[in-house]
Length: 339
Image 1 (cartoon, rainbow, N blue to C red):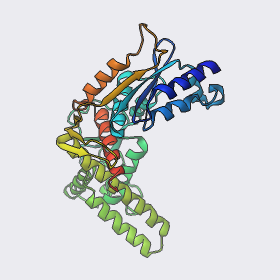
Image 2 (cartoon, helix red, strand yellow):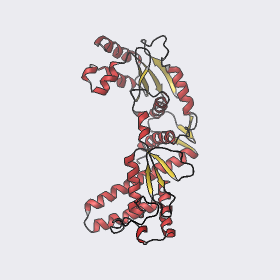
Image 3 (cartoon, helix red, strand yellow):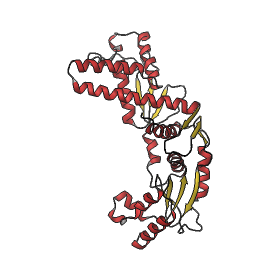
Image 4 (cartoon, rainbow, N blue to C red):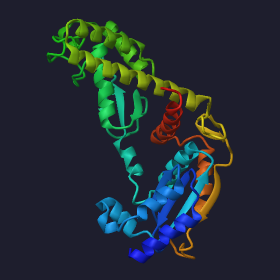
């Protein structure tokens, strides 16, 4: 991109794009989609891409900006609608400049095995679960491992992977395992712990938090302050996880209404589908540089109609799509509820 093109694009954005909530798209010379983004101030955000020479920008931004020749935008009533519209557009069109579609590849699941003494394992990719007891998806491996380790530590679920635990380890000696390999617990008592683990993964963290609280108080009384702080972090994480899981259960099974203080309208969802407002996009615009024709040309109006129709339906049966829409609405709601 030369300086003249950059200045012309910046000028057109300043003249035509509103300073409002919405989603924007950048296109190449043939009208092919490069990138989709969202902003509470479309004009300012889009203009920021053209404030310096692409070669002087960071490498990733420079590669993106260098190929831009036109743009499109969709103005929405609220920020939440912009967030939801952006998510659907990215999933449907997979722009090469976005990494959002790749984030789902980072999702992980937790499985309680079907052994006599079940353990909890992290699953990297979604197989055909069938009747297996699998929870998730969780946003990434780090979070899934943290949940698993917290559950192991607080409930005494074994960490070894053998179907029939016989190899003795130190976890029992330091109080972080119930000791099925030592014969310290029978299968009935152990399955009570597994029931608590199942409840935790479904959003009932009471038993786990109680165990962590006792451990924190003991560590504090013995002046092991770093340990107490670590346990408090785990307690806080469990509280956030419980809040999210309970919201997800309601969001995907019944009706939910979300409204932030600055919103002009209420957002109503039924089983994950947006029911109100029916009008999501209040204005759709595009650059004068948008090509008149082309086999791979991105059509902003058609794309928004398809995306809005998707928002008005329950999320895809793909667990990852369910999780993403739930996470967007939950995080938006929590920003204004003090959670």
